[in-house]
Image 1 (cartoon, rainbow, N blue to C red):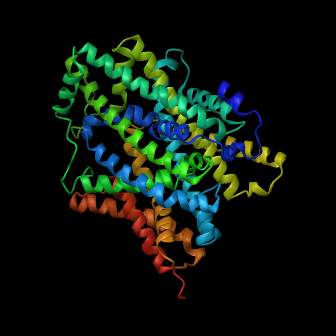
Image 2 (image 1 turned 180 degrees about the vertical axis):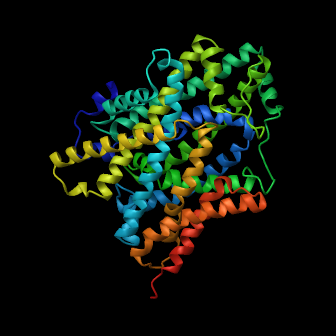
Image 3 (image 1 turned 30 degrees about the vertical axis):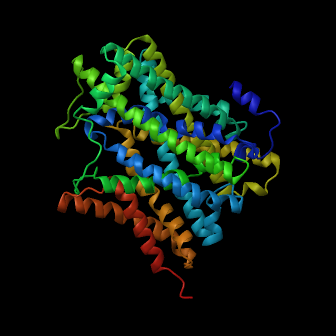
Length: 467
């Protein structure tokens, strides 16, 4: 609220959407780490080690290459066109139907992604605080959304650039404090802790089994494509980069951010093994499903932090999860509001009073949608991060196909048919994945985004104009 007060002074009509193009690139880079990690990475990545070993790092390696594509291909594309909503590119390249379709898929993807991220954080806050106060879960979610509204409503992205940096700091500090606490409790020096982690049965980085959803090539290619889709083609992430005053600084931001993110995610994977070592040493077990997989892995970190590792770790964990959850949902709400008002309501042509009114209505509408999705998925079990990336494969796939087709071909298409192609491609991807799993025990895993994008591109070739 304090940051919001200072950043709201001398604001313009565009402050909420563009930050007046005055954001320091290094601040944006650091803050974006927290927005990308979110409460899901904070809790789910350490927990998922129990079922998926260190295989997620294959995905992270793909992410790093994807960020290079964003830095040298997408950012120049957006800056040359001076875009506020990045989906304006689709309007220039193909036409209004494609433009609206691309924006719609972002709204769909971001609504589900933001809701699932907030769901995990809300469950943990419910477990830590609100159950003891007899406050129902739905009210916990409403309280969080209202608190986010209070500091983002005035100046949106201009405030979020600064609050994200603060939130990232608390998130990383919580992980470091937990690692120090576990190694101290187990009487391990730093070198001994590293040796314990690298010699553990979960420290398997590469998977070459071609039928597995964790196969290296599936994970690496999926990481590459999902980084492009969920970062480079995502209004939430790109809106922050586009608040930087020039293209070169925006590119520095993306490169710096990608390196910090990779190191931080590796840290969280290592933390996961330490959590399991601590749990094994102290006979703390998780429920096991019929297929032999651990259940409720997302509960491991919060349970140990709050109930077993002492007051300092418990407080730092709660600060971390609050920071992580707020940093993902505040920017998501701002990006959803920006995309819908620019892409569907033509807010740029409105006067100041109309802009303010529209922005408030739209932001409230998306708050309600996110609340509804959270309640619909509130019973989900397992690691939510896998659910997010699988959902992203279906919702971001058409968007990825459209942008790749537009950037790397000069083919013109029949704009009116785009919505049909964008609906058919995800449905076919789902049916193909189900068929391959049942017939060949072959799981696409996160690779479904590549299949989805390819089917979208094949569909676009079918509707190309003859000339």
